Image (cartoon, rainbow, N blue to C red; front, side):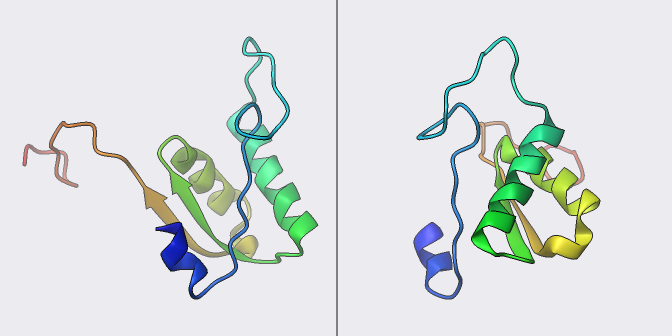
Length: 96
């Protein structure tokens, strides 16, 4: 998916606190959604990105929605990608 996006746009990728190449964090004091949202904003500022299409995947989806609601002027688009868990649901909440 990221390869396709990179064919027509600039990608800014980063590791959330405590994962990948980012500094380790105390697992007894995990960052709040607000802190993670501020990290996204700080990365955008550092990269010189005024507005972005934000992809929130899996557990990043709630943070992406909060970011979009808090900073609508920083958004071009919001994309939410959720993984299937094996349970089947429709968008209306009924069984598929």
